[in-house]
Image (cartoon, rainbow, N blue to C red; front, side, top):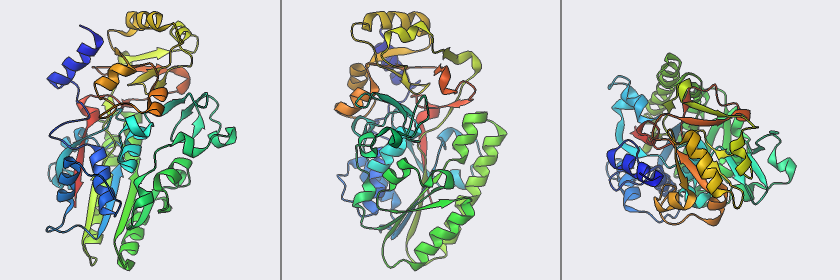
Length: 403
């Protein structure tokens, strides 16, 4: 069976989940629905319209929308806690993450209401061939040296080419990020003209959001990013008690926020969702590539992407040699697809890959039907327990929670 056939068979039998599902909205649809509530003019598809109906309160659109993105809150976490807990009790439907099911791609898809094929932010490690550099895309630094890209003369509007929906919202928009990233280049891109607040504790955010809404004269939109669960999952694996403790703290804070807002005048909808789920990876499934590995001889730069979805920029004329070398060593764990084959499968979204996205994704991607990762050792990811970006149900199933 060809590698394309392997992936298609896994999609057909449910081992892997496609980001585009005729019956299930995606996080792109959620981004479009939220932007519509905030007054941005959107071209809404049927899935986005379905979500807008979910978000209504007694038939009316909410006057105030609070979107809480709990990073890493996959349905596998929701399924594992008591059904009468706040998150499970308020879950109204399942959504699909975008592919790659990773923070860089998914946060940008929600913020732009566009697929990775269009917004061109495919992964944490994104090669920028137009600049001749590989970036850690959200921290906005060069991959090897960790030097800020702006010190290298790189402009954010080149790295992040697709505008976010915040720029066209008519509602009074506010964003809330942890202090350490509230002033980052990516956060400034993501929020556009919205006000941005840093926070040290979620208690601060409850007070701030309720204060803005209590004083509001018109429609408001609030975006709160919470990384705590994802951080614990990466370090300990999604089944660890440390993850359950982080989830409980976040769930309690969000329940308090919803209860506080319920006491204020005006129709307020609290929307909770996420960017992706997590998959726990044992050491036996971690395939490590050192800087002197001969696999890199056929590449123009060390592979980028994510450990679950490595992306390869191959030297011209080395395609067959690379395919043979990769499949000989890693074919048991990964299917190797050309970017054109991934495009034909519509993995990065419907339609064609945009020129910038195609150039950044490169010539090939590798997909693991099982719980495998390919780690470039200098990146320092080998010690992690939790990974994401792939198409497994653990990574792709995400909840829509409403209060």
